[in-house]
Amino acid sequence: MWVCPSVLRTCGSDLSRCFIEFSDESEARNSELGTTEAFDSRYSVVKSLARQPAGLATAIVVENYPYTKILESGLTAIDGAIAHLYRQQHHFDLSKLRLSPELLSIVDNIPLTDTRYRLVYTGATYESGGILSTFGWLRRYEKNRTRANQLYERLLCRTFISEPPKVFPQDPGNLREAPGCSGCHSTLDPLADFFLNWGEGGDLYSSGQESIETEFGGHAGSTVADLAQIVSNDSAFATCTVENVWKWLMGRKFYTQEAPLRAGLTNYFVQTNFSFKELVYALATHSAFIEGSRTDALVGDPLSAPPLGKAPGEIEEQPCPENISYQTDLATPVLEQCGSCHNSTSSNRQDLLSESQLDKWAAQSISMMASGNMPPGQAGPPLIGPVYELKEAIRCWQEQK
Image (tube, rainbow, N blue to C red; front, side, top):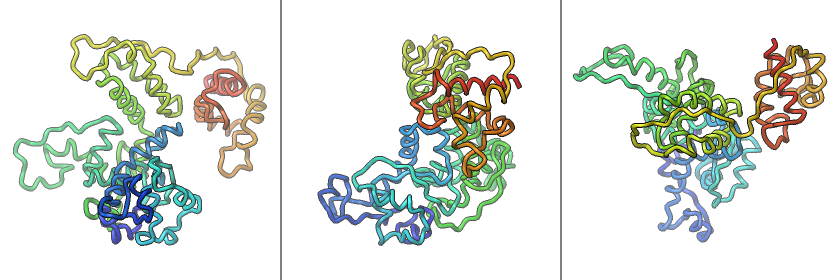
């Protein structure tokens, strides 16, 4: 929604002219919004938008969606102040934005005083990438190189470490090739190119830029949506999330001796379908956190690498039978537990009722059942029962193949 050209005309690139008109001063006072000089509603609007990336991530964690969803194209989050701003006719004409009736209904039913963020799909003009295309991210990091650098550090836990030359040339030319510069810029600049069409500084949302074909990590693309997909599929994203939560809880980074622990936690995070809740619980109940000292100071005797142990809800894998076949062991339970949704007549779900289709989607099926997301209505990861038995049967079938 924020790429609508009317934003620049009515609010300014930094939204300094975006304000909320509200007739009930008592309600405005309670929500820190209002129309009198005592309340600056522009500040509240910008504050809500500045917190939008964190609000988006928090809403995903609360709903226990896969954490990779923070980078999903078209997804954003709105609270009462943002929803009320959307409804202000002196700023926007929502009818011209061709928004879905579902989104309009959500916007209309969020009260001004609601500070919770709701997940919504905006159908933005430019291809968006979750938190990467929220106002908070784009405005906080106003230059494309800064945006790329922050993404590299915050989501992939990597830094650009090349030292600049002691005597910087007056005109270094192409920084991607210049000596002393290329070490960073050959990676940083192509990464920054994904943000081109959003604009920098005062040109934010002005829609005057054209995207170009670029690449990152060996994958080509041109939009923030492409970049978000590349990052969420990169194994470093899962490892970096584990490192960030570990540092938040422990006050320090992993020690070298704790590499097996980090790998084990990362594998568990992936196996639980990127459940942030499960990751926090696994760390908070692990002996490294319970028995170790929480400090960000350097210590002379770092913690030894403890075994990962059993993560929450984890049980020992049962040995597989010597022979398992699709027709004998899988066809009937798949039909009974999955067939009502996953069949050849379904337009938006994978067909799982043939051997070739189940083979194609086996890994994802195992992951979805292990996390409790499928079949719908599970109370959590299955430990016993038909769903667990089907998951194990498909796992053994794949291992046998």
